[in-house]
Image: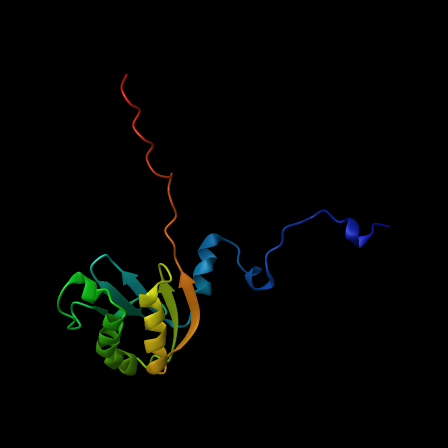
Length: 146
């Protein structure tokens, strides 16, 4: 009689993934919550509100929200408050109460966004940090001529 602990080490799928047969079936695991994408650039901040199917509901930047002046002012955490003031009617129109927040990195702008979202009564259920993956590293130094 074989002992149960002598079974070969098999890699099994988690219980909630057992019904999936092919990678195309992963589309059924899509989130059921709205998402907010935060994209800080060198001169601006862009915040996009999407639904569960990633269709854009509203998109505003610090420049379009009335923050005038240098890029330094547009990139400040205070610009997030101005952007969310513009987005607030969209939150109410689409009945947004719970969101997933997707950002590139943790910085003062992101912390300010979380604080402002709490002020508007929006609950963050997931915080996804999408870092860029280096493809093959930086280019090597040029060899000196001799």
